[in-house]
Amino acid sequence: MKRHVRYIVIPLICSLLVIGISGCRDRGTLDVSVLEQTETEQESLHQSLDNLKRLDNDRTGRIRDELIYDLNHWLDGEIHEDSWIYPTLVNQLPAHLTKYDDVVDPDPNRFFPADVLYLRECQWLSGISQWVVKYSDQAHNDLWASLIPTELSKDDRAQLRIAMSLFDWTIRNLQLIDLPRYPSSGADGGGAIQVTASSEGLAGPGYTKRPNQILDNMTADSWQRARIFMLLARQQQLETLMIGPAAQDRKNRMPWVTGIVISDQIWLVSCDDGMPLLDPNNGVWLRLSDLQSNADLAHTLLSDDGFEVAAETANEFIAFLEGSPMALSQRMAMLQRHLTGDFRLTLYANVLLLARKLTQEFDLQRAVLWTTAYEAEEYSLAIMQKARERDPIAELILKEEGELYRNVPAIRVARNLYYSGEFIDFDDEDGIHQDGARTFMMIARISDGDLEKLESEKEVQQKLGLVRGENENKLAFTKRVREQKQYLIKAKRLASFWLSMLHMEEGNYQQAIEWFETRLMPEGDSHPLHHIAKYNLARCYVAIGETRKATEILNNSESVQADGDKALAELLSN
Image (cartoon, rainbow, N blue to C red; front, side, top):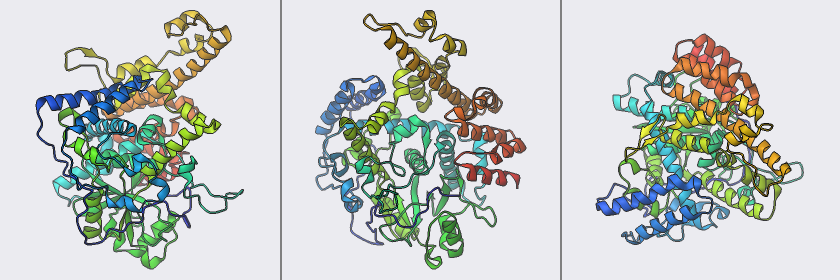
């Protein structure tokens, strides 16, 4: 696993609160078991949350405002735990990350606009996690399952397989990009690290996109991959963490690999390489305890990944816990207790209990709150402020955010149905026929002939809904047609990728191979998801037993994940 940046001296970007081996009860926790409620209360709440599905058509903010009003009206009638306070892990966050209302949670009895985005994210993540688990017995998920030791109990094996299916979905659906450095001061970038970079709208590792933006964009750095995996795992009540060496200055702490907690072990995976972390000596899947008991091995692996730690303390680690401002709030804990059936979501992260478990049962030196979620919120606010000040880069970032989904309705609907697991046509609860994700993906695949004629033939323009307005001059209309053509090309590429992936998820590997090889590979690097498509093509060959073809593809990888692809090829060859 090769890093793209070298970590030596980096200022405070992670919270520093030590979770001791003992201590008093933190009041920032709530029982989130489902509460009994009247049918009317349940129906009213579910109707409110159903508005989440309409948010994509909310150009004025009216639906968002209605949802916030309904949730606050519901919250007004609930009994609050007056003694509840925000989890103490937040207290040691850097000051610049706690200056916004959504971060410091000044009023736990109100819902905010940021909560609406968070609820929609949780809906998507829950939907994805459910159908990934549904298809977890498909052959492409056998790859990592074969590394699970046979001596594990049946339940532990099942839980680890589910976790690895979610991890694998993340790797196969989010194309890896380089992990950015934190910005440095000085003309040559050689000065001190800017610890407040996110508050200034400067790009850095892990925080340039929120989870919904990561899923929309389908590219991610390794920290963003890790965050999506951890959020998917949370929806399946699986505990995860980021792990970093403790032998770093407190102002220089950085996460290294991701851990999956299964019973009394923490299994390690790399979102850089897209693989479990393997022992270089024997190819065995490493657990945290393996590194804690072998400082030499830990030192070797850390050094390979750019961490400068002393050999004698290389086997001491700390935990970085995922918990956004919304996920730690009382209002989300209260709401989670009332969600049942198809509306059941995991909204609340009990980081205090997990922190104690990790320090008491797994010998982690301390547990801190991973600041990436907070930096992402702060970065987003900073970009919006800079755009209001007419900053051209910020304006471009906001313009490009979700523009494909705004301009091609079919791909927007396809995305929502895809994440919800509604792949094929279905009848809704009222018995009305509804088209599934696959139908909308096919609609989004405009023929090459129509795309070629779009700029020149009025009939094709009208067919695709492009009609010149009464007061629109010819030049403006021509520009609009040209721009829409580019959106339609992008939508077709994305639809082709998703259709290929649907065949793969359902175990139709020959069809998936045909789609990858005939629709995506011919475009080469011009396809924005070319590298992840090649990786999935290789995985399809693995699933049908043609490992020679798979290893050839993986060994020729030129993606950011190339080291991991070649390591997988070596694993398949043994």
